[in-house]
Image (tube, rainbow, N blue to C red):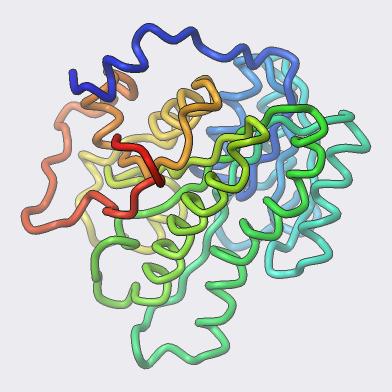
Length: 289
């Protein structure tokens, strides 16, 4: 285990039971799995996304389905229909959660969209990618931090992608939005540290078989792709760390290696491609990870 893993091994996990989380993109994939995992840990969860039973999207999954999974297992969750491209709806997502539960302890900025294209991508679509993938997390953080400051604690996890650190054909705008999100993580962490609010990135750099990824890459061999529940385990682990664990742009693969979490659930573990960058060099000021 690395020195980073050893430094955390003696720290007790933060108790999540009874606390409140907002999870965006909770209608399917990693977001839905995270909502279920947090509820199983005792958190009350606000599930936010556009897809509802009344207004479904082409991809399977709705926030109402996620809420039913939580409540059927004995947990507590609410559906908060939210178009993350609309600032007023993001602010309402937070206020609705506060009205229902009285507090917000964790924000998981998981929702993301993409369209295929690079320099040829229409600017309108480029702007929409940034609105959902980068601006929405910023607005959500701005909206939720007053309550977290009043509580004296909080945790924010931004879900990123390997595309943020590497060029993949047709994912230029998506990658740009994700590397900007990782910059937001470090910048927000510095500003919120005095209030015991941790901000970290969970970068998915192990293939995960969420509905969105499967739809975008139907031609790939998915036999070594992990189920979304594996990524959710890593996000849950991040929320269980003390507020001093902050400003980290963490790789899913690195967390698995360093801390022994997120055990593989596939028979053939994924072998990373050569020549791929998996580390963001932007440091949290004054620290070495």
